Length: 580
Image 1 (cartoon, rainbow, N blue to C red):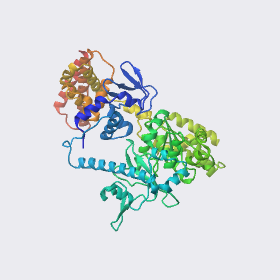
Image 2: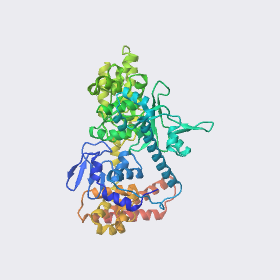
Image 3: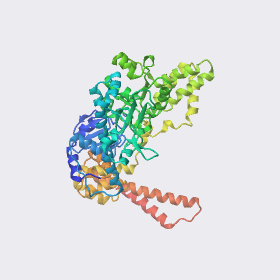
Image 4: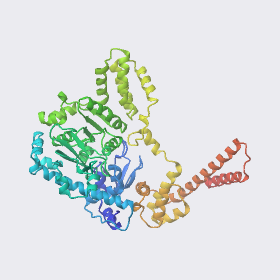
């Protein structure tokens, strides 16, 4: 169910947008504003602006904008409700729900999600109690053997599932709810039993820090060694990275992330002081994972196992990360040890050394390909180049691609032009380099900035309405309706004396944020911009009439005299306004 309006108003009053944005962006004061590099696209000069007074942000590069809620939604890929819950917790605001505001299916889903979240929190409390109670001796012994102490087990949300129906009896929840939460399974016979039995458990939290599922590891050699919650209304493996809530701040500060394969490796690295570490949940890195990482990081270290499965994971993970514009490096610990083993055997210094010696993914691919194919024949060199091309084709920067091709030609001792021709031949049928990635693709950013003249004029009109509230009504009367729906709605609200920043529609809030943070214009510009907007509309209409006339001429149809009259009248009006 939605929150009451007075709760949302209180939250908006309490939020410090500078503090929220400052968790991700290094801001510096510039007059009444704060400016910094946009976290939503790649840029070298700051085009991202924050108004603490108005509680708004806007990027003049990629046109992201709105209030603190919009910022958290975009930064963490959350729904409106989820972003509100995160901010309410951060700023200590209670949000009473409006029982009468929503009914039907949507309300039922929200209520069910709340029940599932509460049940999963209760399950974690019970798993923790099992771990530190009499039934958890074997699990505690296993964790101690992995170097894990009791306080660390609590810190990282570990627990123990003994099985035997104990969890179900303690939770006392309806069977259908237990099954929907992924905690229980219904057998063909109808019997309901626990999903996790005789396993160490790992609570899995989403980006908002809420428990949405569990992972479990056997204490011995049983199969499967690892078991995750199934897909549920809360748990989607392809969108969750294990340890993200613990790692996010460090990733943002260092602009780098370490990706590993398992819970224990991730926990071991956090324990060793490498807090910018996350792990996938037994699945390949997805595009959604990569977008999540790409919003806050510039570099990714792939710390997967050195066996064939780990090498395949490197190949699957590199492309979505490269498409997001990240620098990708492959960590190869000595003697093929995984992170947990290396840290327990040699300590954090050994892992720091492994990170320092991490190879760019193209170097790693080259060495792997040479080891498999050799470079003794032209055919072998062609196979090596094709494997390296897999990474180069996904790279977004033309400069980086150019340098990688130059290095590859030198390594293979082949003609550089021939190698480039081979690369282009394969690239012609490949669409990787044109994937939509406004953060890192110069081409896409340029396209986003190529706004039509009429839209630039309408955003300017909205900016003038913000700067001079007393003329907002006059602007709307002179320029009604605006072509852009968001600008039109924001102008209508401003003319009515309402605050567009509080609008329900995200597009309206974004348009108003741009208006609030745009350059201040003198009052005398109002009449000039209105005139230019009117002229632009007439030019657009004239172009449309001329297009229709041309199509009729090409088809050999007689020209409607009213069209010719319209065209002439529009032309004369444009000339008269242009001169006067």
